Length: 543
Image (cartoon, rainbow, N blue to C red; front, side, top):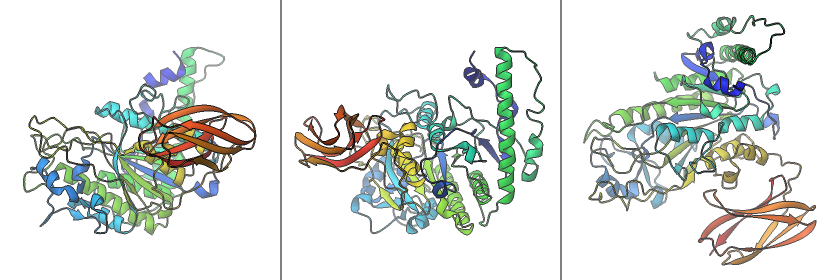
């Protein structure tokens, strides 16, 4: 059995996650990475990702005010009121009619974030071939998949690929990724080459964490010159334990050095965020913090009852989410580090627009994501889905339940954050396997970082005529040298719809393209070099 497979099958034993400030912490092992932007720019920056586990009901989270009658007709028992006491919160009177929204009444802290320009609501997030299994859907999103044949069973997590490609572990004493709030190893951090180390400690005495780990892996067994597959595996595990010890020491150091300035509510998510804030303020350079809030799989009794739809399991979860994030943002501001942190929520799938017979909602397709923080470009990305197909409810009780349309691929959100906020270059995004979505990355970061181009990249101007185009067009591009490159066209959801291999000559190139097969709409055309680096791109309209 290969070492890699052995580790996958082995129990983690004493290497299973430790308690820091009352929160289970798992650290992703060091990676061999290469930064593509100045360390001074991104060294102190981190992203915090909160999984809303179970499938959040987006339609009761962000209510479409402009379609309220339709919304109420398909959710007679669980609808959030639009007026009176405990009604939804008017988000913004300046929004367009299509974007008019009410927040769930328990999301009042998000209204303040919105008013401060620190919240972006991304509508209709999912992936093309949505899997409504909790396990499969979660695994796909963790690994950057979408259920298609070419992107189904990826062997590693998208965060692992990103961290491996974007950073040099020798420059970081901290684990590049940390997981809190979940005892199970995170698929996001799973690597084929280096497996994550889960360290387990209990208690809240941060200064004593390292001493509790002092005997892990020490002393190592002496096997002399003995050699076997079994001994190789044991030695590999021992090396992982030593790494765990080193990380435990560093995590303890930054936790001890940090502080919290804000008051946090008594919630598990609040404790997770409190721990993150303290570690960052103490000097942690961890790039990705992965947190979790459970309980969103509400097939029954999602609300207390008709007339009390502002109460119940879903309402309680939104209270915990919004109040915890509110305290976290206040803490970051008081600590003087709010410029360095972006927080986002995600969930494995949405819920059906039509309520079921148990005052709940069943597994559906798409839902909203929240992107939060001072660096965020506040506003709304996309609009509410149309409820025309659902209202009045179909007689058979099933028709149209899942005819919802995806507006944004979740990978567009991730590529925007790691590219515009953490400075991932085009090569890093390619290595992360998010390159198909990089060209359609969303406008989520107020002041994007421009990553340093690779040595073969050039920003030569590309021209296409005519634009808009009906059928045939000509692309003109100046190449600095002869290379075998490519031309690709992507739709607004980041899907590749056309690809050509092209021999670029040194000097001016004239490339005829036929676009008659494309549907009307907006597209992006890119030219790549022989290393698949983007040399130039443009947007065009197909009439």
